[in-house]
Length: 122
Image (tube, rainbow, N blue to C red):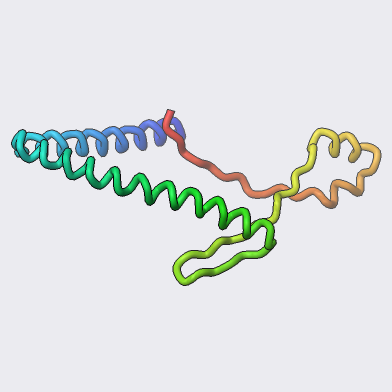
């Protein structure tokens, strides 16, 4: 049953991809060589401009993250919010289950979250 649902979902993804491909073919069909050349020039011009801004964004993002980690708390700006999250705690489940045989009360501290599903393309 689930396999059939996944296969049907995959078919919808294929249909969407086919529609997008056909749309691009139609767009390409109405564009003259002159328009395509002009669009390539525009893309190139703006790519160069964006490159510098992208580097600035990456550099400043790293500085903000480092400062927030050092500060140890979230900071709100006018448009952005740097949210601080303390490091996650993890446990060696195999070792704890072994210790649980000797100290059964440890089982009371064990919490198990609800299962979740993510759908990925293969």
